[in-house]
Length: 317
Image (cartoon, rainbow, N blue to C red; front, side, top):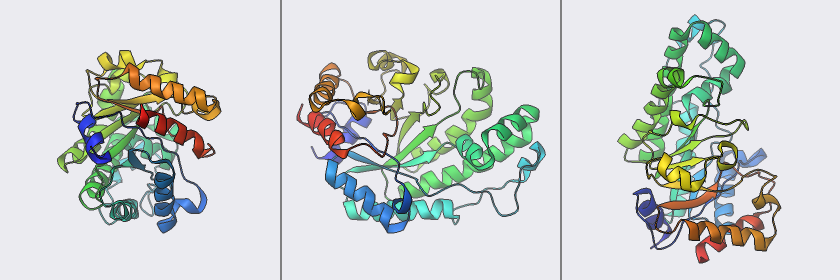
């Protein structure tokens, strides 16, 4: 099997000839822009040889249309989708197309899409969004629906025009204490599904990332039945082991293994420790559709040699 076949096999719920592996990190500075960003992705791939690439959205932010300011909850009702020609979509398609043209189908690629609720909070501020959502949910949710439609357009475009295998949907907002289960499912889940279903309709694969970005435990129940081809979650924050996750997510393919933080083994361990841990992950999960990865993005200050140790250990196991 080649890299592409191997990953697609696992995402179809089957086991491949060996366990795939990949890690990713946020790019910064000039490497978030234009051709420099494409070249940075390709250089990392050439250096470390991971089995698939998560195309980062660094430098491509969702911005409100000119003149829109959510001063009150009712203002959200006037927000309209910005459509295919927005920079938010166009810049992503360009990046994905350039990368996939250079790769010539050698490996799968998944574009990083932040869930609509995350984009709303990034653009307007978490405190303001939560306050207005509690105050008057109906108009705020209309605004969220508009953002979700832009996410759907983005998901379709990076697959159909950019050549991506699918999307990596970063789901946030499920921290314990932010919403009840019922609130999340009523208010936020519809927007998540808009993006995921659009990717599916375009023939893409969905990787659902249940993000532990805040360091707080999530209520993973709000996401466990999403239309995902694989789930990636924060083992070391949500304290859900790989073995337990096999049952929790109903036997769906899993992406997990290493702690992504600077306090973790990948960032601090010796070569022998990293290689032994990587090989142990492979052995413990043989016969299950599993990909070695990390809880989330690894720090971009990590020595790439450490990533090579883990990647090569998995590929040779």
